[in-house]
Length: 370
Length: 244
Image 1 (cartoon, one colour):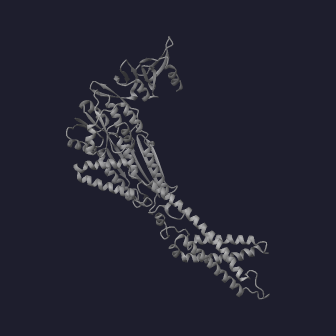
Image 2 (cartoon, helix red, strand yellow):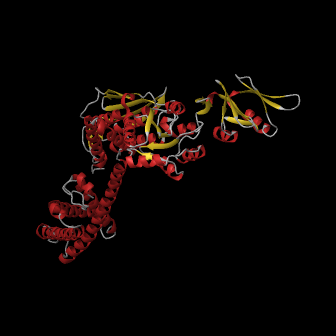
Image 3 (cartoon, chains in turn cyan, red):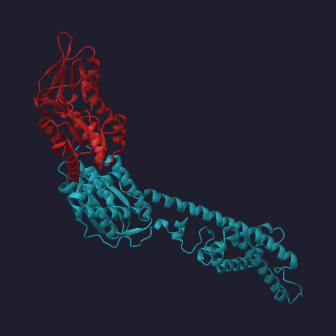
């Protein structure tokens, strides 16, 4: 629940009404009003000579009602937010019905003041004649339409929320985790270094802590590419202790804008895979090359590593899962604009991330407007 | 007791060595960083116990353990692993000694006391349930005191004698201590049974011929051997050869 709070900071936890001070909601109200006016005009067509005049007058009156109600809801917004959903609904219905009653009364009084036709002395037909009947009918219709509209907004908000929750749940489920294999091997390395090289052991513990902190980060927040690269380098330092000279990593990332924002842990898993399926499986080890490039508004990060001859590296379950995880997280971050490519040839495996250059820290998928 | 440590990661070996130094009655005779080194050390130094990492480049720990069994007096094997869910489950089921890294001294002491030789059949079961590559890429043969690893891709055929199986391969001929039945199960479909006593590599068959007496024979490429095909195995062989 608190997650939606983060993406819509001024809304109460369960509030479902759209912002009536905004143009979108006003447009929605105008549309609802016109539809209701049309319904009235069609229903009364048999009683009136002129359909269009009836539609126009009904529209005019209902627009007054609708826009006044919108203004009232806009002003009452902050107050309504502090109430529980059921109380807010009751208060809104009372407010709306009262507003409708008042607008109707004003319309009637205007009719009384200016509606007398000078020539005939009788009232112009567009103004209402029976005072109580006019008020009661409007209040009844207003109550029903308000209730329906509130219900519509409520259901719509619920649906919207469940979509968002689902997306968030997906992001959290996809949150990259540190693999147990890496964790226990690192622990073993640290256990060994504790006596032989306490300083290195200390550094390894600090690095491991940093990695864990990164993996526990809020999955919806993007981090700077600089931080992401630092995470990957931290990972590299730990693996280096374990594998020694067998692991070499060549960084060629001068072209990358370090302020670009990316979902966290997109490079580190590629490095982890390159070590796990590549370097670790080669008795002599090898060199992982990480290259970054920028083509206009598109960033490209490529991780290349040697693989043992026989294995179908790209098809290996663990590797595929990690790549699929990154692909899905990039997809959630930039729907339809990011992709992950892989290729294996000449004893080398290459994974390439291609995504737009963005410097906003929030995921687009988690902002409310959709 | 002589102990051999096999692990591809230097810190892991270093730690095991230090722990063993603190346990009385055990001496580290060598460290090996891969399977080939481990097998060489085994036949040379004849350790009593091998601490064997499961995940290594080249030969995996399970494969090394299988090859170790070719030795005249195979050492006891204790597997070590940092994290491998399936392998650990399999070790449990097959009641095979294993240690989780980082290894605790007490557990190491306990495992050393209970260390035992692991028969290949159990290793095969472990490989199957640990979802590891069961099929070997090399066959090991004992040559005097040494172990010789023969790449399966270099093997022309296996021929059974009364007691032993002869492997004919690019590097010559060797005797191995395995049954033709188990070999044919492991290396199907690349190897075809042509006779009760012969299993040949399909890729080295140059021709199947019929002699005057109506008997089929297989002519092998490179080594030039001609092997008899039994009446019972002929139809299957012909189907395979014709089928593609």
